[in-house]
Length: 60
Image (cartoon, rainbow, N blue to C red; front, side, top):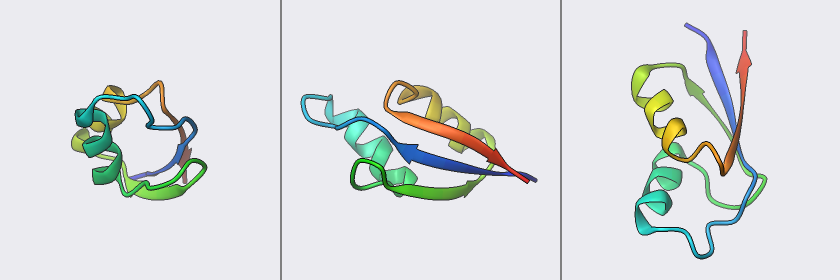
């Protein structure tokens, strides 16, 4: 399977607590922090919930 590079692009200030929890579960902490996650349905669902806050790139 492919991997996804996820970058937090916007601040969590003023965002609902559920979005804070989703970002934390993805492994992101600060703006411009990056993680590499395996591409699966659970990760895609979490990204979909916070797609306005993150940037996603597919890695080979």
